Image (tube, rainbow, N blue to C red; front, side, top):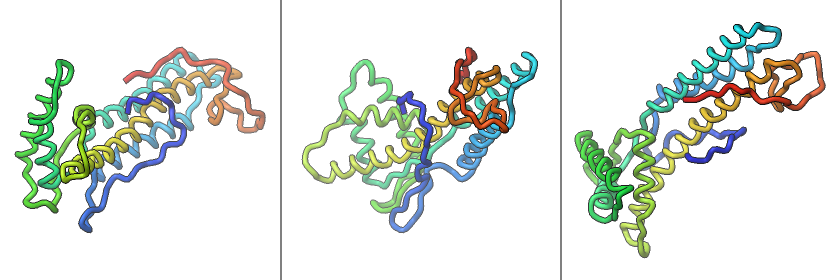
Length: 234
């Protein structure tokens, strides 16, 4: 999630998994629909609007409109929740690990306290009745990231039951992290795309792999010669 590299080919990860012949979704259909629709809206806006032969005021308005759509997407991404599923043993393992077994320093102790408070809130959502049924817990990207950074320091010895519980919890976190990375990569790509799109408003500036600002009757492909000075920030 910390990788700043701009990805050009982003493969959508699985948003659900199968266990005990049941399907469990990690984000709701509604959230998926809203995010995917906003991705398409940003792409369509950039592809269907251009600033060639427009006044500076018109160009500024196009940029402002594109930024609004991007910010709407960023807000959806920031506010999205995930379903984190644990059976009884997995929940007990995670609780005991954070509460009793991890060592914390000045940089991590407050995160640990925050997460144990979160586990207390999870109890109010219910607990699994046995070791097979999965209980759904609501979490967000920040909490998932905190959990991973804390328990990643944990070391296990051998392949006992606790090792398998550790691996199972990490697998759950990893599946959600892939979803976060997928949608976050779109946000980062759009930030750069909007800057390049604005640059294409100027004459003789074309962007590799994009149709922005191109004369469709011209087959010659030019390389971009200028970067936009405008920046898109969350």
